[in-house]
Length: 410
Ligand code: NAD
Image 1 (cartoon, helix red, strand yellow):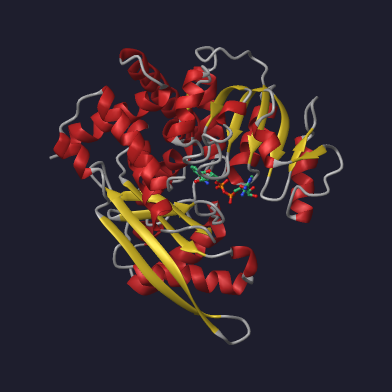
Image 2: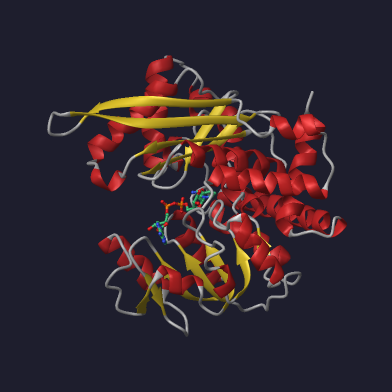
């Protein structure tokens, strides 16, 4: 299987076959502006020392400062971070915000670290990269296995290193912070909610009913919020999964109970109100809407043929390989692509950045209404572009983004 960056480049190549861009422009998007790797030595609780590998990829800043999350995962490596940074570049363009694309990470299993070790590691990432970070240069945020608390440690470390007394600028260097330390209302649920607004805008177009049977892979920030939001809006979530197990209840899961169980035990294992199935079985369940909300490369040429969902909403980044995309296209299963579907997170991150720089704090109602407007607009423009070029929604979103970036090149 190709790595995520190779997949991203296949997608880019595909877009250039549909719409003729200048080759110099496309070539400029085939590699990042900066691809930075750092060593992060920390002291472990037992007094020993351990060195971790960290990354920041600054892919493209034609539209604005580099913007993108930080991932902590044992499989995180440079090609994954490069792909995520490339997709961030396009994502910001799809929602038309003045931000470029970046992404960061650390190769680590965070579950193996104590809280103190995790904090020292997070502070170490900032120490290694503080020169390149800043509100007008590069603005990180959370991704897989990182959260508001980690962002708060990072802001604190950045403030110490830069001794910048301008708190609005220091705060605006990281988004996804807790509300008490300069975070935005609505950021935690923004990706799931943004995905729901995209789905609502395109639902009739992709031929789905008002009440859908929904299956979700992943039950972290994005997956659990999406499950709650879809269920609160009258849809029936029949299956969800985490890295340990998938659970199925054909007539609908009680999400409050699932959420409470996950909070209490840390996983979906041993949940009594549903049947256990494997993650592979989950992907093949008959349903109206399948939402991958975990990782890249989960739907491949090996399992795409077995997908029985009517539509796929990609809340994870890169969950479908280009080969699987072709199979799904032939099976007439519409895919609402990641660079549109999960762009609610970066949209509210942009709102947070704006609030910080202006010393403002918007009410949740205001944030969510701006998010809704942005997602609806991006969905409509993506649909228009895919219809204009008679292509998939993914290629519509790619070409819309590429046109916007090309137009802003100076
Ligand atoms: P998270 O760490 O909060 O959750 C990840 C979830 O995936 C966990 O429930 C984990 O148990 C599950 N998981 C891990 N391996 C799995 C496997 N093999 N099968 C099934 N589930 C598995 O991360 P998140 O922030 O929810 O991110 C999920 C996806 O959404 C990622 O692709 C991320 O890049 C993307 N995304 C996140 C945001 C955001 O705002 N957090 C924004 C845009 C896109």
